[in-house]
Every structure is written in C-alpha cells, then in structure tokens.
Length: 306
Image (cartoon, rainbow, N blue to C red; front, top):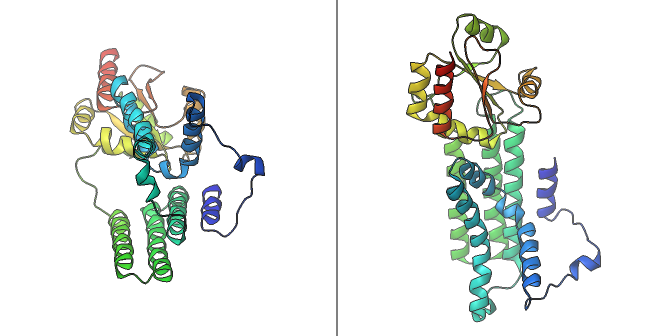
C-alpha cells in the first residue's frame, strides 16, 4: 500500500508540500561539513532509485569475505559520488545539461512504475498460485511500456525520441515476459519437500538429518540463496550423500512458521536454516545470508555429531 501510494504520487496525481524551511536548506560547498551534509541528503533523496539495486548488492556482499563485501558496498557510494566529482572538475559540462522539462517529468513518472513493480512483487507473494509474482510484475511492465510510448508521443514529435521510447518499451516487455514464462524444474536443484509436522516427525523417526530452510516468497535474500547456494552442485551432492531430508518452510503459509523460528532464535528473521541431526534435540543453525562453503561446513558438523 505504501509503495503504491508513493508511485501514484510520483505520477503527479497528488503532491505533498513540505515546510518552506526545508526547501531553504543550502549547505556550504566550500566546507568539509557542508559537503558531507549535502552528500548525506543526496543519498536519502536517491533512495527510490537505489532501492531496486541495493538489496541485491547487500545480499551478494554478505555472502563474500569481509574485505570483498565492504568493497562492494563502498563502490555504491563511489558510484553515487562520481558524477558530482566529475561535474565539479568540469563545470562547463554541467552547464550543457538539459534543464527541467517534460522529459525529466517523464523519467520521474517511469520511476513510479518501479514502485508499482515492487508492490506487485510483494502482493504476488500472498497469492497461492505458481508464478503469481512474475505475472503481476509483467502486467506492471506492460502498463509502463504503454505509458512510456504514449507520453513520449505526447511530448515530442521527434522520430528519434519515439524510437528510443519504443525500444525501451520492447526491452522492458521482453524481459518481464521471459521472467513470467513457466519453466520446468531442472535436475540441478535441491529436491525440496514442503514442510509439515508429520513429514518432519517421520524423518526424525527414521534417524535422517533434516535441513529446514525458513523462507517466504517476498524475501529477496531467500531467492538469492535459492539461486546460488541451493543450485550449487556441491550442495546438491552433499545433501544426497548424507541422506538429508531438505524441507522448505514458508513462514507465511505454515501456521507455526514464525513461532518455530522465534523458538529457535528469538528476534531472527529470514532466511534462516536449521539442520536437525539424529539423536539431538537442538538443531545446528545458519542465520541470515550464507554461502555454499558455510552450508557445506554445517552439513559436515552435522555428520560429525551424529
């Protein structure tokens, strides 16, 4: 609801006027503190633009070593600062930038569809149907493509401008369509079993290790783990070799999902992985993001304590 409301505002349906004093903020550019405050304000204002990128960067960074992870996040800051650095060095370039007008308004309006797409992604996670998220995002992409072409035609009669808009619309539609096409499950994946108390108890009675992955459809980090760690052949081979029963527990769809997670690790979120070893009541756990190496080490620890 919040994301959709923000998107509607970015389309220009309504606007929020802040106190005049806020618009009067003017940090000095000839002091270190002034430049620091201006950079902080710029970072806050750029949040709608960096929102689609930064969660993925954080997910990848958390799965790397400390040095590599910090370097990845640092590069985001460098990337945000670089245009200002270059324009400060070459002020004549800034003077040639196009002024605010219909095109810049169109760019802002297209950013609204990023909000709508994100809202559709979260909404789709609540629908008990395969591919619901991808289909909803596809509908948003189609609407964005039509809006882009129509608005471009309204604000310019340039053949070049219209061709660029049509090209962007086609690429956007093609990418969303490709993501929404149902695909057959490949063999190169962990053979997950949907969690149920009866299936869990049965595996425990058979003295088999049980790997429970707490997840949700809306969890971007969970999707990253699934496409990296749990599609890795080493992970698949280790789970098969140790005769582990891999169970997928969707905390939104399993009634006791959140309660079970809070009982294991109060205050923890997802993704969260628990390995139940035969003969042991308390599981070995992996909280938050992890890489294939960490999961393999968890499985080895499970074999060692059996």
